[in-house]
Image (cartoon, rainbow, N blue to C red; front, side):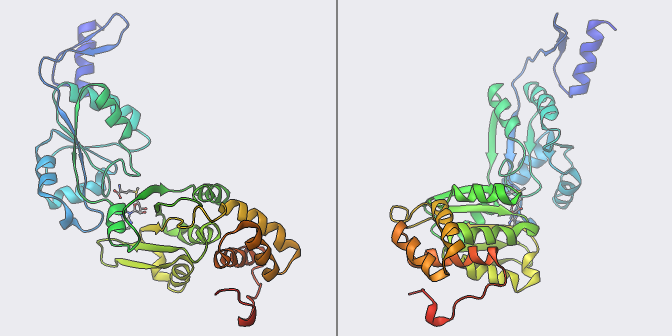
Length: 329
Ligand code: SAM
């Protein structure tokens, strides 16, 4: 096949408007006479479809192409908005391939919008490679802000919102998750996590072990949807509440955990866990807590909560001490 023909075919395959040619190295080079297009990063609702912004609607109707994670899912939103713009799927598995194709289209002058299944693209969602490459190719990247679960949850959480750390999803496997959370034990900023319904219980159990059951937290479930629930309290209480109502274990979750307010006074939680695990092997709960308090300088209540949680893990049938033995102030 002649070079010209292959270049024409490549142009058609990439959906590029301008001319193209094959270089000596057999690479396709697009010859672009006009201005490149813009890549719009468009936030869409996280549940309630009325949360779409007017600007998002305008941009989605006017661009040449919309990139969506799951095109069938996004089609429902677009149908409701009566938007007929073509959709192309862009998810974790095809992001590399799609990125090359889309950069070529943007370079040739097409305007493209990226959306996620819900909320703001790139926030625990694909699109980072595309945005990086767009910058590298001198293509304008413009955000169309709107819903995102972490900000919605934080704003309604009752947990200090001034300084926060967004952690997104933590590792799925137990050992990796615990290690990960342990690194956050001394974190003084509010921490925000995304969690799947089938892992929420395990996540909260580990949060009790690492941060202590008395740490303030908030659980935001099914935000903006019919069964929206937002609860604030101590992690131990929230875990109990969730375990007591099977319906509360369904849906989508954001967990917000207050930062460690005693970071200077309190020993690193991983050190405490290690210390307690040694003490609990040969001493009673009360003795272990007493020694750990003296050695670490950390709060007695915090150590007590950690020791109880650890002891439950070691021997699930363990009975908590009666009120006379209870160390809480
Ligand atoms: N890009 C999205 C955003 O801007 O928030 C997040 C996508 S991430 C793949 C999906 C996770 O976000 C869910 O597992 C859940 O943790 C959180 N999430 C999304 N929608 C939510 C909602 N309506 N209520 C609570 N959490 C939600």
